[in-house]
Image 1 (tube, each protein chain N blue to C red):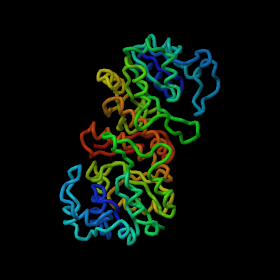
Image 2: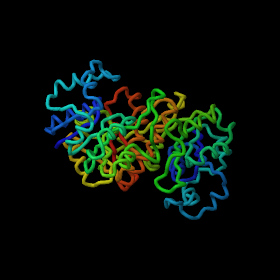
Image 3: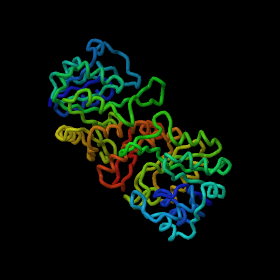
Image 4: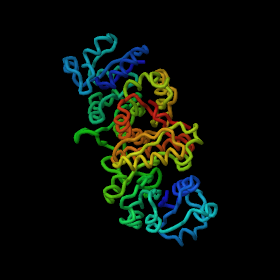
Length: 226
Length: 226
């Protein structure tokens, strides 16, 4: 599939790398191609700068948000939640219409330091805001509940015996996304219903962050035992 | 131990029944003893009215919030989140001072129907509000992330192989609560840190409610796989 991954950070790199490895035609979208390729320092989390990562993945093309989106059949929102709406606006309504968007972003507000608070919550969610802004886009909230390495390679933790969630208004779009999650190695994908269920998975972040502190690692995930 | 369970609903009954079974001296606290004992209809969830439940548990005493709290060494807040502050006010500051409170309540607002929204969230929590209102009370948030039957009998699901959380400011109080959770059969109690971690477990409710809908049962729980 032709896939645009919007966002050049840890989540974008994880998704783009894995999708490339699985044989998809991947473009990574960024606001400023020259600026992204000029980066030489690791990001705040110590991840290598984009050019260092991209050097080992010659098939992955870096493009503007609009260029990447225009040629894609499916998109991944791997931007920070606070800039997701701006990234999608830059991608352009006509380049999004009729396509599936896997929305991985969490609306975290780090402006007051750590732990972050949520930019939207409870009676609304980022997933719903994106869906409302682009009615012809088929938004599927997924993968925003675990660390990037496990999103794309779940089998490295307990053989993949843990759970992920999808929510969205379009059943066929969810089927497409579930197929991709299966191809990553996920064994338990739970369909929570329409996009308003994104409220639940986005509000999981505060517990996730406390668990990362308590366990001293991001390499964990929730399994829904039933 | 002498334990007061505040609240006569499904959660209060589950806790009081299990603690009685384990040999504790249990009083259930209510706003209006005569009113509670006059109930003849099941509650909104189809649970039997309090007198029918209490008839089979002659050792469990029904008392006012204040009376139950006064004689207790440890308290359980099993009231609805929306009335927890009023119940604790009725219990009385002097009857709470120096004691441990297991806070199971979720601040759910059903005033706009289902699904409920949260009365407090993100940068505050009900657990923190209780701790702030009663500085001498040792609040431990626990058990608010699973259905009542599994709170007190976790082994009936997957042999108890799933997780619960504690958070609170007093290490000894958490030790006491963890001991009780162990006695219920919990096998994985994760200490999330101070009481502000209650934000995380209270904000888990929206996901929990969507999962109950998707799975068509409340008999599930999260296991933190790591």
